[in-house]
Image 1 (tube, rainbow, N blue to C red):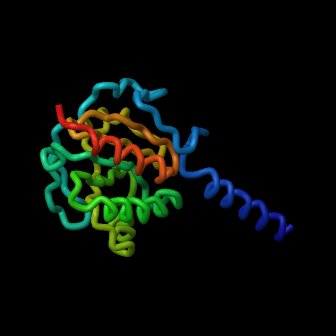
Image 2 (cartoon, helix red, strand yellow):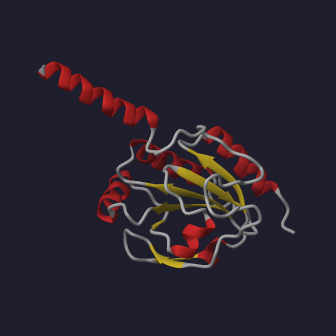
Length: 187
């Protein structure tokens, strides 16, 4: 009986890990040229990154939206309790390091329901240098009031949301999308 209970618990934990941290089944690594937010109250096509000033959860340093003007930005919504999110954070750090001084940046966001203390510890343990903020309501609305994580968005130099990636990122696809947006001439 005891072995059965342990087996059930292990299967449930494995299902959570393999299934990701999402509440619904979604297409892994989905991306498209036209962003559509299924099940949300807005369409992001043509939406811009709103103005914001938010503290980085690690040190309280102000992160301002205007610091991303003219840059391609990968915005990733993460949770410290999500195994896929924690793995993705290492990949985000690497991709940020792979595009130094090119007009590219990574911005981490977490749901306000998540534990900021735990995320701060995860960031410090991993020595991640990209900023991590808790989004305010306008920022949440711009991205479709995110519920499931991980989910990421690629924002172009003009501040327009161009790509949405659901579930764990396929970094080969993301890298090509970043390079494509970096290569575009500003209008």
